[in-house]
Image (cartoon, rainbow, N blue to C red):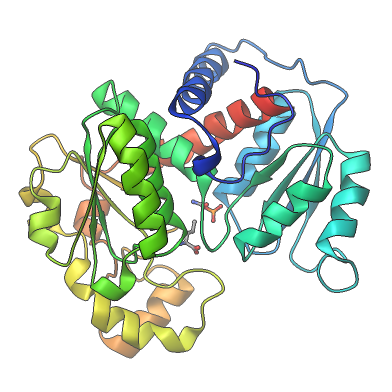
Length: 327
Ligand code: CP
Ligand code: NVA
Protein backbone atom coordinates (compact mmCIF):
# COMPACT_ATOMS: atom_id res chain seq x y z
CA UNK A 1 0.00 0.00 0.00
CA UNK A 2 1.53 3.32 -1.03
CA UNK A 3 -0.37 6.40 0.15
CA UNK A 4 2.53 8.84 -0.24
CA UNK A 5 1.42 12.21 -1.57
CA UNK A 6 -2.26 11.56 -0.81
CA UNK A 7 -4.47 14.13 0.95
CA UNK A 8 -6.69 12.99 3.84
CA UNK A 9 -9.80 15.17 3.46
CA UNK A 10 -12.70 12.76 4.05
CA UNK A 11 -13.15 8.99 4.35
CA UNK A 12 -15.18 9.02 1.12
CA UNK A 13 -11.85 9.42 -0.74
CA UNK A 14 -10.40 6.20 0.76
CA UNK A 15 -11.17 2.54 0.08
CA UNK A 16 -11.91 0.14 2.96
CA UNK A 17 -8.52 -1.50 2.26
CA UNK A 18 -6.73 1.85 2.57
CA UNK A 19 -8.58 2.64 5.80
CA UNK A 20 -7.66 -0.79 7.20
CA UNK A 21 -4.05 -0.17 6.23
CA UNK A 22 -4.04 3.12 8.20
CA UNK A 23 -5.67 1.38 11.19
CA UNK A 24 -3.09 -1.43 11.15
CA UNK A 25 -0.29 1.10 10.86
CA UNK A 26 -1.75 3.09 13.79
CA UNK A 27 -1.94 -0.06 15.94
CA UNK A 28 1.69 -0.86 15.08
CA UNK A 29 2.88 2.69 15.84
CA UNK A 30 0.96 2.59 19.14
CA UNK A 31 2.59 -0.71 20.08
CA UNK A 32 6.04 0.63 19.24
CA UNK A 33 5.46 3.83 21.25
CA UNK A 34 4.37 1.78 24.29
CA UNK A 35 7.54 -0.30 23.99
CA UNK A 36 9.73 2.79 23.67
CA UNK A 37 10.75 1.92 20.09
CA UNK A 38 11.47 5.17 18.23
CA UNK A 39 9.92 5.65 14.77
CA UNK A 40 11.51 8.90 13.63
CA UNK A 41 12.35 8.32 9.99
CA UNK A 42 10.80 11.66 8.96
CA UNK A 43 13.67 13.66 10.49
CA UNK A 44 14.31 16.92 8.68
CA UNK A 45 10.71 17.36 7.53
CA UNK A 46 8.22 19.94 8.73
CA UNK A 47 4.44 20.28 8.82
CA UNK A 48 2.11 23.28 9.21
CA UNK A 49 -0.92 23.15 11.49
CA UNK A 50 -3.64 25.65 10.60
CA UNK A 51 -6.41 26.01 13.19
CA UNK A 52 -9.23 28.43 12.42
CA UNK A 53 -11.19 26.82 15.27
CA UNK A 54 -9.85 25.86 18.71
CA UNK A 55 -8.61 22.37 19.63
CA UNK A 56 -7.04 20.31 22.38
CA UNK A 57 -6.85 16.73 21.05
CA UNK A 58 -6.28 17.36 17.36
CA UNK A 59 -3.58 19.95 17.80
CA UNK A 60 -1.72 17.97 20.47
CA UNK A 61 -2.04 14.79 18.40
CA UNK A 62 -0.54 16.40 15.30
CA UNK A 63 2.27 18.01 17.33
CA UNK A 64 3.20 14.90 19.29
CA UNK A 65 2.85 12.60 16.28
CA UNK A 66 5.05 14.86 14.18
CA UNK A 67 7.67 15.25 16.90
CA UNK A 68 7.75 11.48 17.46
CA UNK A 69 8.28 10.99 13.72
CA UNK A 70 11.21 13.42 13.85
CA UNK A 71 9.39 16.35 12.21
CA UNK A 72 9.14 20.00 13.11
CA UNK A 73 5.76 21.74 13.43
CA UNK A 74 4.49 25.30 12.98
CA UNK A 75 1.15 26.13 14.60
CA UNK A 76 -0.98 28.89 13.06
CA UNK A 77 -3.79 29.88 15.40
CA UNK A 78 -7.16 31.39 14.43
CA UNK A 79 -5.76 34.92 14.53
CA UNK A 80 -2.05 34.39 13.89
CA UNK A 81 -1.90 34.27 10.10
CA UNK A 82 -3.09 36.11 7.00
CA UNK A 83 -5.33 33.20 5.92
CA UNK A 84 -8.72 34.22 4.64
CA UNK A 85 -8.29 37.86 5.70
CA UNK A 86 -5.39 39.17 3.62
CA UNK A 87 -4.50 36.07 1.66
CA UNK A 88 -6.61 33.58 -0.25
CA UNK A 89 -6.59 29.85 0.43
CA UNK A 90 -5.07 29.23 -3.00
CA UNK A 91 -2.15 31.59 -2.31
CA UNK A 92 -1.70 30.21 1.22
CA UNK A 93 -1.60 26.68 -0.19
CA UNK A 94 1.15 27.58 -2.64
CA UNK A 95 3.21 29.42 -0.01
CA UNK A 96 2.94 26.74 2.70
CA UNK A 97 3.20 23.95 0.14
CA UNK A 98 6.61 25.27 -0.89
CA UNK A 99 7.96 25.28 2.68
CA UNK A 100 6.33 22.33 4.44
CA UNK A 101 5.99 18.59 3.80
CA UNK A 102 2.33 18.48 4.86
CA UNK A 103 -0.45 20.80 5.99
CA UNK A 104 -3.20 20.19 8.55
CA UNK A 105 -6.29 22.39 8.33
CA UNK A 106 -9.15 22.80 10.83
CA UNK A 107 -11.86 25.27 9.97
CA UNK A 108 -15.28 25.85 8.49
CA UNK A 109 -16.51 24.64 5.08
CA UNK A 110 -15.19 21.43 3.54
CA UNK A 111 -14.63 23.37 0.33
CA UNK A 112 -11.83 25.33 2.06
CA UNK A 113 -9.74 22.26 2.88
CA UNK A 114 -10.48 20.85 -0.59
CA UNK A 115 -9.21 24.12 -2.13
CA UNK A 116 -6.11 24.07 0.07
CA UNK A 117 -5.38 20.55 -1.18
CA UNK A 118 -6.00 21.50 -4.80
CA UNK A 119 -3.38 24.26 -4.74
CA UNK A 120 -0.82 22.62 -2.46
CA UNK A 121 1.80 20.22 -3.74
CA UNK A 122 2.05 18.46 -0.37
CA UNK A 123 -0.49 16.28 1.50
CA UNK A 124 -3.31 18.19 3.22
CA UNK A 125 -5.08 16.65 6.23
CA UNK A 126 -8.56 17.64 7.39
CA UNK A 127 -8.40 18.32 11.14
CA UNK A 128 -12.20 19.01 11.21
CA UNK A 129 -14.56 20.95 9.01
CA UNK A 130 -18.27 21.61 9.45
CA UNK A 131 -19.01 18.57 7.29
CA UNK A 132 -16.37 15.98 8.19
CA UNK A 133 -13.88 14.92 10.89
CA UNK A 134 -11.96 12.07 9.23
CA UNK A 135 -9.00 11.77 11.62
CA UNK A 136 -11.51 11.35 14.46
CA UNK A 137 -12.99 8.40 12.56
CA UNK A 138 -9.70 6.53 12.47
CA UNK A 139 -9.38 6.93 16.25
CA UNK A 140 -12.97 5.76 16.74
CA UNK A 141 -12.47 2.72 14.50
CA UNK A 142 -9.20 1.79 16.26
CA UNK A 143 -10.96 2.04 19.64
CA UNK A 144 -13.76 -0.26 18.42
CA UNK A 145 -11.25 -2.78 17.06
CA UNK A 146 -9.40 -2.77 20.39
CA UNK A 147 -12.70 -3.54 22.15
CA UNK A 148 -14.35 -6.06 19.81
CA UNK A 149 -11.47 -7.28 17.62
CA UNK A 150 -13.21 -6.28 14.36
CA UNK A 151 -15.41 -3.67 12.69
CA UNK A 152 -17.57 -5.70 10.31
CA UNK A 153 -21.06 -6.33 11.66
CA UNK A 154 -20.73 -3.93 14.63
CA UNK A 155 -23.92 -1.98 15.38
CA UNK A 156 -23.10 1.67 16.06
CA UNK A 157 -25.84 4.02 17.28
CA UNK A 158 -25.21 7.75 17.02
CA UNK A 159 -27.46 9.93 19.19
CA UNK A 160 -28.11 13.66 18.67
CA UNK A 161 -26.96 16.10 16.01
CA UNK A 162 -26.42 13.61 13.16
CA UNK A 163 -26.15 16.19 10.35
CA UNK A 164 -22.80 17.71 11.37
CA UNK A 165 -19.14 16.63 11.13
CA UNK A 166 -19.21 13.72 13.60
CA UNK A 167 -22.58 12.28 12.59
CA UNK A 168 -21.83 12.55 8.86
CA UNK A 169 -18.40 11.01 9.29
CA UNK A 170 -19.55 8.11 11.48
CA UNK A 171 -22.22 7.25 8.91
CA UNK A 172 -19.59 7.14 6.14
CA UNK A 173 -17.09 5.24 8.33
CA UNK A 174 -19.75 2.58 9.08
CA UNK A 175 -20.68 2.34 5.39
CA UNK A 176 -17.03 1.87 4.38
CA UNK A 177 -16.19 -0.66 7.08
CA UNK A 178 -19.26 -2.92 6.83
CA UNK A 179 -20.91 -1.73 10.06
CA UNK A 180 -24.56 -1.07 10.92
CA UNK A 181 -25.12 2.65 11.45
CA UNK A 182 -28.20 3.84 13.36
CA UNK A 183 -28.54 7.61 13.41
CA UNK A 184 -31.01 8.53 16.17
CA UNK A 185 -32.23 12.11 15.86
CA UNK A 186 -35.21 14.26 14.98
CA UNK A 187 -35.57 14.25 11.19
CA UNK A 188 -34.16 17.76 10.78
CA UNK A 189 -30.85 16.58 12.31
CA UNK A 190 -30.38 13.67 9.89
CA UNK A 191 -27.47 13.83 7.44
CA UNK A 192 -28.37 15.31 4.03
CA UNK A 193 -30.34 13.09 1.65
CA UNK A 194 -27.43 13.20 -0.77
CA UNK A 195 -24.92 11.92 1.80
CA UNK A 196 -27.34 9.23 3.02
CA UNK A 197 -27.76 8.08 -0.58
CA UNK A 198 -23.98 7.91 -1.02
CA UNK A 199 -23.60 5.99 2.25
CA UNK A 200 -26.29 3.50 1.22
CA UNK A 201 -24.59 2.94 -2.14
CA UNK A 202 -21.27 2.20 -0.38
CA UNK A 203 -23.08 -0.04 2.11
CA UNK A 204 -24.30 -2.24 -0.75
CA UNK A 205 -20.68 -3.10 -1.54
CA UNK A 206 -19.45 -3.69 2.03
CA UNK A 207 -22.32 -5.42 3.83
CA UNK A 208 -23.01 -2.33 5.94
CA UNK A 209 -26.45 -0.89 6.61
CA UNK A 210 -27.47 2.73 7.03
CA UNK A 211 -30.49 3.39 9.22
CA UNK A 212 -32.05 6.61 10.51
CA UNK A 213 -34.74 6.78 13.14
CA UNK A 214 -36.42 9.33 15.40
CA UNK A 215 -36.84 6.64 18.07
CA UNK A 216 -33.78 6.43 20.38
CA UNK A 217 -34.87 3.09 21.90
CA UNK A 218 -35.26 1.49 18.47
CA UNK A 219 -31.92 2.92 17.28
CA UNK A 220 -29.88 1.88 20.32
CA UNK A 221 -31.48 -1.56 20.82
CA UNK A 222 -28.65 -4.11 21.27
CA UNK A 223 -26.08 -1.60 19.92
CA UNK A 224 -22.41 -2.49 20.43
CA UNK A 225 -21.33 1.14 20.39
CA UNK A 226 -23.31 4.20 21.47
CA UNK A 227 -21.83 7.51 20.31
CA UNK A 228 -22.79 11.12 20.68
CA UNK A 229 -21.35 14.62 20.22
CA UNK A 230 -22.08 18.12 21.50
CA UNK A 231 -25.48 19.62 20.61
CA UNK A 232 -23.96 22.92 19.47
CA UNK A 233 -20.74 22.76 17.49
CA UNK A 234 -17.87 25.22 17.12
CA UNK A 235 -18.81 28.13 14.91
CA UNK A 236 -22.56 27.86 15.61
CA UNK A 237 -24.22 30.84 17.34
CA UNK A 238 -25.00 30.82 21.09
CA UNK A 239 -28.62 31.72 20.31
CA UNK A 240 -29.15 28.20 19.03
CA UNK A 241 -28.77 26.51 22.45
CA UNK A 242 -32.47 26.83 23.42
CA UNK A 243 -33.67 25.15 20.23
CA UNK A 244 -31.04 22.42 20.39
CA UNK A 245 -31.79 21.51 24.01
CA UNK A 246 -35.51 21.35 23.22
CA UNK A 247 -34.93 19.27 20.08
CA UNK A 248 -32.23 16.90 21.34
CA UNK A 249 -32.86 16.33 25.06
CA UNK A 250 -34.75 13.12 24.25
CA UNK A 251 -31.53 11.90 22.57
CA UNK A 252 -29.29 12.25 25.62
CA UNK A 253 -27.16 9.16 26.27
CA UNK A 254 -28.16 8.05 29.77
CA UNK A 255 -28.36 4.80 31.75
CA UNK A 256 -31.72 3.85 30.15
CA UNK A 257 -30.11 4.07 26.71
CA UNK A 258 -27.02 2.09 27.74
CA UNK A 259 -29.24 -0.58 29.36
CA UNK A 260 -31.15 -0.82 26.04
CA UNK A 261 -27.87 -1.42 24.18
CA UNK A 262 -25.96 -4.72 24.22
CA UNK A 263 -24.61 -6.04 27.57
CA UNK A 264 -21.08 -5.44 26.25
CA UNK A 265 -21.84 -2.01 24.76
CA UNK A 266 -19.33 0.81 25.01
CA UNK A 267 -19.92 4.56 25.06
CA UNK A 268 -17.85 6.83 22.82
CA UNK A 269 -17.64 10.63 22.36
CA UNK A 270 -15.09 12.59 20.33
CA UNK A 271 -14.86 15.14 23.22
CA UNK A 272 -15.04 17.76 24.56
CA UNK A 273 -18.31 16.71 26.29
CA UNK A 274 -20.87 18.53 28.42
CA UNK A 275 -21.45 15.81 31.04
CA UNK A 276 -21.46 18.11 34.09
CA UNK A 277 -21.29 21.79 34.98
CA UNK A 278 -17.51 21.94 35.39
CA UNK A 279 -16.88 23.98 32.23
CA UNK A 280 -17.58 27.66 31.59
CA UNK A 281 -20.09 27.01 28.80
CA UNK A 282 -21.59 23.99 30.59
CA UNK A 283 -22.18 26.09 33.72
CA UNK A 284 -23.65 29.05 31.77
CA UNK A 285 -25.96 26.93 29.63
CA UNK A 286 -26.88 24.70 32.58
CA UNK A 287 -27.87 27.71 34.69
CA UNK A 288 -29.85 29.34 31.89
CA UNK A 289 -31.84 26.22 31.00
CA UNK A 290 -31.98 24.49 34.38
CA UNK A 291 -30.07 21.36 33.34
CA UNK A 292 -26.98 19.68 34.81
CA UNK A 293 -25.92 17.48 31.88
CA UNK A 294 -26.41 17.63 28.14
CA UNK A 295 -25.63 15.06 25.43
CA UNK A 296 -24.43 12.45 27.97
CA UNK A 297 -25.08 12.01 31.66
CA UNK A 298 -22.12 12.12 34.04
CA UNK A 299 -23.08 8.59 35.15
CA UNK A 300 -22.53 7.15 31.64
CA UNK A 301 -19.49 9.33 30.92
CA UNK A 302 -17.75 8.09 34.08
CA UNK A 303 -19.03 4.49 33.84
CA UNK A 304 -17.00 1.35 33.11
CA UNK A 305 -18.63 1.30 29.65
CA UNK A 306 -17.08 4.63 28.69
CA UNK A 307 -14.08 4.49 26.30
CA UNK A 308 -13.78 8.24 25.75
CA UNK A 309 -10.22 8.59 27.03
CA UNK A 310 -8.94 5.53 25.14
CA UNK A 311 -10.57 7.11 22.07
CA UNK A 312 -8.83 10.43 22.77
CA UNK A 313 -5.43 8.75 23.12
CA UNK A 314 -6.01 6.96 19.82
CA UNK A 315 -6.28 10.33 18.08
CA UNK A 316 -2.51 10.63 18.37
CA UNK A 317 -1.63 7.13 17.14
CA UNK A 318 -4.02 7.33 14.17
CA UNK A 319 -2.94 10.85 13.17
CA UNK A 320 0.66 9.61 13.34
CA UNK A 321 -0.29 6.83 10.91
CA UNK A 322 -1.85 9.34 8.49
CA UNK A 323 1.24 11.56 8.55
CA UNK A 324 3.64 8.62 8.26
CA UNK A 325 1.74 7.04 5.36
CA UNK A 326 1.12 10.16 3.29
CA UNK A 327 4.31 12.24 3.62
N1 CP B 1 -12.24 15.52 19.24
C1 CP B 1 -11.58 16.63 18.86
O1 CP B 1 -11.41 16.93 17.67
O2 CP B 1 -11.11 17.37 19.89
P1 CP B 1 -10.43 18.81 19.80
O3 CP B 1 -11.50 19.77 19.35
O4 CP B 1 -9.95 19.09 21.20
O5 CP B 1 -9.32 18.76 18.80
N1 NVA C 1 -19.14 18.65 16.42
C1 NVA C 1 -18.07 19.17 17.22
C2 NVA C 1 -16.89 18.26 17.19
C3 NVA C 1 -15.74 18.70 18.04
C4 NVA C 1 -14.56 17.79 18.00
C5 NVA C 1 -17.70 20.54 16.72
O1 NVA C 1 -17.60 20.74 15.50
O2 NVA C 1 -17.52 21.46 17.54
